[in-house]
Amino acid sequence: MFSTQEQFSAAAKSAFETQAATMNALTTQAFESFSRLVNLNVAAAKASLEESAATAQQLLSAKDVQEFFTLTSAQSQPKAEKLLAYGQNLVGIASASQAEFAKAAEAQIAEITSKVSSLIDEISKNAPAGSENAVALLKNAVDTANASYGQLRKSTKQATEAFEENITKATKQFSQAAEKATVKTAKK
Image 1 (tube, rainbow, N blue to C red):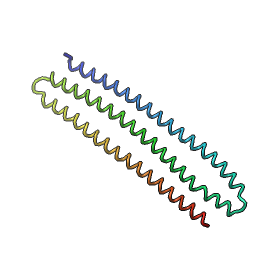
Image 2: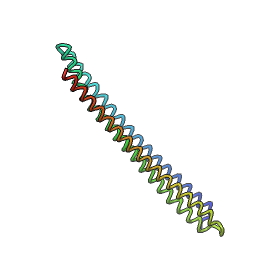
Image 3: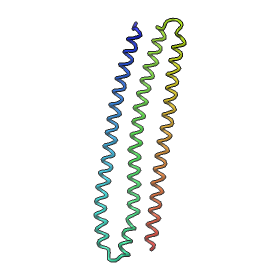
Image 4: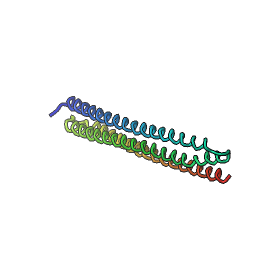
């Protein structure tokens, strides 16, 4: 049978190991997300430079001002579509990262909750008579913390979904506006 001090020491060591493993997983995920973001931006910059060169060549070959403006307006729709795709890729990276962070946090909280519950159960078995209220209070605190975490997780998920929805709507509206502008300019 362990003493209470040994139980707390073992629980603290286990919690530290769990936190270290979780921090390692989160750091790895952050670097992977950053890498995907850098790759997305490098690809976007490269494509933009290539398109700018091609567009400049087209504009320089324009025979008159009308053709120049027609060529210029024709560029807005493809650029809007590329901006929309870039925004969707960006949201995809952010969503995947958030999901991985949430998954790691949930795993850590589940493991810590399990260990704390086991520790409380073990302490309650060895607790002196008359300490039932203190043990019940401790269990209640753990239950309250778990409920608070559940609410926080739910709120975070709702906020993330709302953010993704707003980005999608904004990029769609931008694309539609660019398309309308292209049609109006082409009619002139």
